[in-house]
Length: 174
Image (cartoon, rainbow, N blue to C red; front, side, top):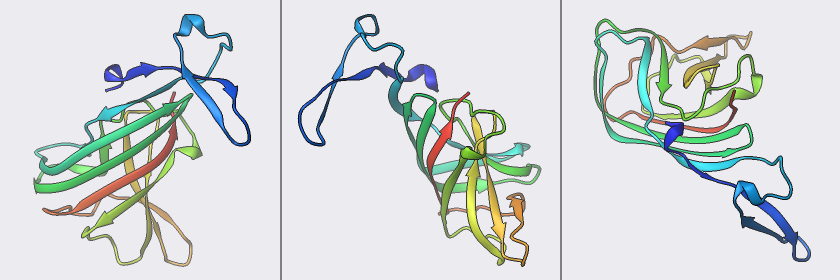
């Protein structure tokens, strides 16, 4: 939740020789260089869910999210390890909700790297990514090696206990 963010603003106040920049924390009212880039960092709780939640129930061994905000760029790291998962009526695209900021609409720059361990994806999958739309969730998309390099939304993959999901990268906030 972005409201839990610790809002600290940093500004370059001087340079100190080759390759060295001195950055000083100053109150917004004392900023002689305004406007400037906003900087904050914090944590959030990522939640594995579906477009239609239904009876989806997930417990986690690990459920960690961290972010760094610089201007309108949000760098996130997500680490989820599933302890147990059950579903019969949930459906649709797999998502991770609870992101700290809403993504900007229609931005191709909101495609992040996703890494999975032990998850059973279609055999033709080459890459798995995480797309943040104009919302506080992201969803999984894959690239299929079927000669046409088609993208597909991950809807048919059954996650199970001990599966590991890691997402990292930048997205632009609204």
